[in-house]
Image (cartoon, rainbow, N blue to C red; front, side):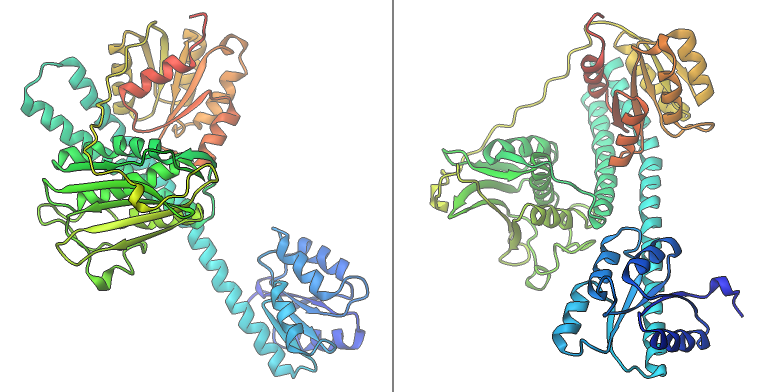
Length: 519
């Protein structure tokens, strides 16, 4: 027998005393706890204060009608999860039931209601609510797990990547075999980072937490940027890349970072599933009111029966014969979701297995883009992709404190900074970081968030409380990379937030950006 407090709580709302009493007695006999009210205003108050599992809501109330009460319950974040079973002896037509359901009611019953029917409906909705709560809890735990997983994976990836960068700097004239081995490590590390980021993107999208930072975006320039992003993978597999651009600009309303991610994912996908020495073509043109971006390859192709599911989460069509199947089947699902958020569509066509495939993205263009046909695309021509030049070393040297409980990570970051000429000190917990910062008065602190004795956010807040450290630049260097982590860091007084792993170029760029002008 459950304790009374563990039984579901029902809020019975009816302005007719006899009807309210009868429904309360029926529910109590079924083992349910019941509280009552006769007005809509009181129902809204009780729902927020008592958090009932279900509201049994009559439509005719003296102050606010039941339809409006239901709508307000479902719009209030505090009462949205509460189930609503609406009843009525007055509104008995199908349009009334539709109106109630449109207002957010979970079910609608016409009165008079047989006791068995009332209890059965209440119990069925309670079961539904229990399942929904369990699913929400599972989703919350999944998101927490992914955030922790990302942090734990990034922690070892940072030292691995940075150690390779340091070896290259210490021995710039290494043999081709050594350099090739280093490149393999860097590529595989970057691949792991992409997998982690894709997992977190899926989680954020499923929760509706991805917000597009829209602006006017010119697609020809964006495609060139995407080519630079995907170029290492394309070159590694010795593919020939053809870039087809029109002789006019094409403008869309979108998030340039996310659209570059979309095109980059398709290019990386084409490189991965095309045998070495293959051909990849990227083009954009206008067709009526749409911009059409196409990525075509002569790779493994897609069977007709798989074309419809290729964009589903965790789906993969196959793998190139020269390499094991890699990836999680997340990239194309992200592509479709991000394109849909832009009001566009993405499709794939393939003549069949072994005959290549074409992915097409269609986005609505802005008025400043000319209306054109696909024939306006210029003839094919191979575009040379510029190779990024190493970043220049910082012009000045600084006193830097690196704080990380992962000793390997701290030592490698410190070595990279020392190689650039800086004076570097280390600490491995929050208390040590505060003591070292007050003693050394560093110009910059690279501070991990997950420390054993206190969080990096608490350390930053403490440091910001000391006037002598007011000009110290605080940079979060952490495996926690979600939007909420960045916002929390900035609110605590950090100047910038870096997600592990970072390379020497990023460290130097950050130093140049955030150091004091007088230095």
